[in-house]
Image (cartoon, rainbow, N blue to C red):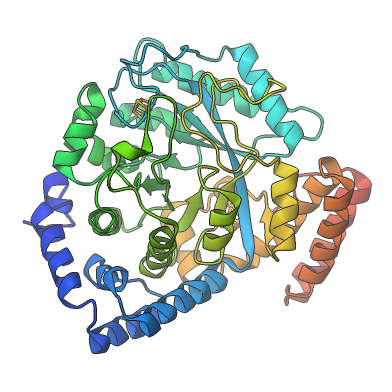
Length: 472
Ligand code: SF4
Ligand code: SF4
């Protein structure tokens, strides 16, 4: 029986409820009156239920689909403006005892070299990332209690935060590691992590069990209830995600929104972010084996419908997506992207892109500078902001500001100041010229005169006085 307030995965991700939701969405995919009502509700910017949003996803009426895309763009603009936050993944270790069939790190893959970064290698990686201009990382590691125990993860986080190379600093470390105990989540919280990210992969229990035949991750309930342990352990910001293509995308969509509803019902705050990776080829992974893989149009519709359903949740797209695909979804709801990523263990410090330990093939292989320039040419403001969690704006405090539209007063000034840091320290000449023009133009959007004066003074101190790390 569906119960979003339950702490049991079987009840908050209820298969029968998803079945009924999909059937209802199918019945109403051309119900103009109902779709109009759902869109009117969505225009109040308070989100939609999984049932309502599933009707929008199933909708086959062309003019209504145009309205869906237009509304997604409007919501994106209202809550996130034209800012895009940048981050990079950092792979610590590809040792893994799980058997996920879609990932080349699975424990039975003997053809991949296994590698775990030492403290010195982490220094080299983080120095290379700082030299690119990154300030925000997402660390990734396989599950292996012998090679990657929690102590290793904690020590790595400590090392990452301690490295100050030239003007560089990693100011926010998000963590993407396997589901663990509440005690370990407390330790991660105490280590000062930003968001704890864990992809569900698929919400369909049977598919999940087939795709995860061995290892601790094969336990659907333990995995699905991980966010509850993380939040109970003190982590305020959690990031959900599905690997689209493992099961039917409409099933995953409903499950994802039910998971968000569950977090809201139990903790009073929904997910901080939602990631939307799609299955893609890798060593030992063939796309032909995944009959549920989704095309670009379906991907765009998914992004638009998630944006409408959960307006306050950041949305992340990685370099799995090509530049063209990323461009298409940026204005439909994506607020964070990775740039200049290397998806192998030790990839950043090596001069050439290594291929022996990659988790997935990168489609967008451009450098961070190229990505920044591209974003600005498209009219976006690249942001390296990490202010909220460092100012204690997490969990419900963050969401309250977000829902009231007040967070915007911080986001734009912080975006401009962190962009200026990037331009002063790392940008190519061309990128710097475009960036300074963009900053000049964007200053006119800061309406509070006192804030504007402060931002101008700080921009000058960054550019001419060598000062760093201002934030609102
Ligand atoms: Fe291991 Fe994660 Fe890959 Fe599964 S997806 S095999 S848990 S690294
Ligand atoms: Fe994100 Fe907060 Fe910075 Fe805005 S001010 S970009 S919400 S960290």
